[in-house]
Image 1 (cartoon, rainbow, N blue to C red):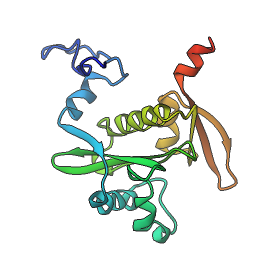
Image 2: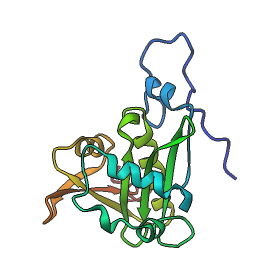
Image 3: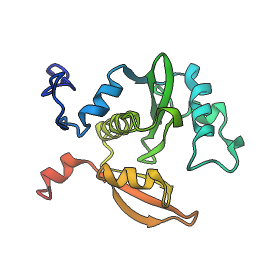
Image 4: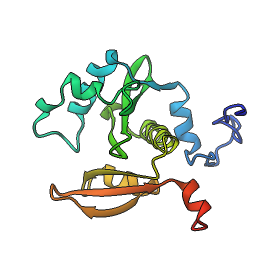
Amino acid sequence: MAGPAPNPMHGFSPGNTTKRICPDGIDKQTIMHITNTHIREATTDDIPAMHAIRIGVRENRLSDPSWLTHEVWSSCLAGNCAGNTWVSEAGGRIVGFSAARIAEADIWALFVDPEAEGRGHGKRLLRIATDWLFGQGVQEIHLGTSVGTRADAFYRQQGWQRGELTPKGEVVYRLQDHRIAQEAGTC
């Protein structure tokens, strides 16, 4: 039986001006920005908002977004046994999303509306997607991103291992299930 969900504000008091880090690595300032957010599984009704975010990013832009059809989006939603997608909502609107695929053992997408960047949405969306994949039995997750972008630095900061370049010029990142590493005594 799972215990109560951890309190993200544990250890913080309203008058505390010292930067304190929560157990999941998110600092107090970020917590203050994301306490009014909600992450949930995406539905088909969310596809237009996710598509608008994907098309509207500043980096890792699609050269030809025509392949990103309703069917492609739908293939990554919960219930299809292939993957899952989550959205982060703030102020009543979708401001980011992440998508994970089981067979590919990857994070297929993680994007935040440029107007909502720097508020912890990406960290939370990445965490839920990786936790879900590990819970599905995936032992190592990978993803690709453009070299020299903020995403390139972000994944490294989140503890992912930077790897080789793909023929398309993207850098591959990998993350192993920490439970596997601990059992093997390599942590």
